[in-house]
View 1 (cartoon, helix red, strand yellow):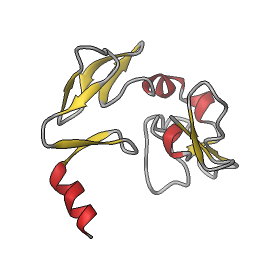
View 2 (cartoon, rainbow, N blue to C red):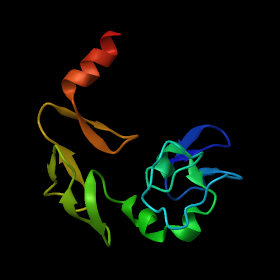
View 3 (cartoon, helix red, strand yellow):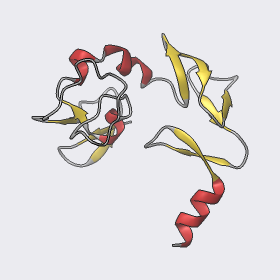
View 4 (cartoon, rainbow, N blue to C red):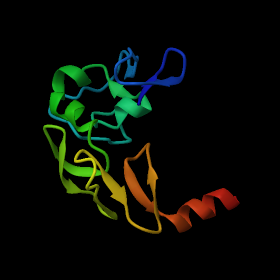
Length: 125
């Protein structure tokens, strides 16, 4: 899914989505994979879901766009996950994604597995 800043919805990858900060103050030149909160925009593939990509993200970070296919993956190549992130394991039925371990849940925005106790404490607030 990709964020669409025009109407604040989520769209499939096949549909056009405006997911850039435009114009952005910062650039992705030599910063691909960086998700620094000090900048007005991001150069990490998760920006496609958040709608906060720098305006030169597609030009500068073609390898990051490929990572969008992989879920919970530290090392993604050609649509296949080569190394799962912490607290996740390989999905034997789908090579492009990993699954959260028991007692962890998937945070789609951060593309990480978080402990269930964190989710419960957030819900209780």
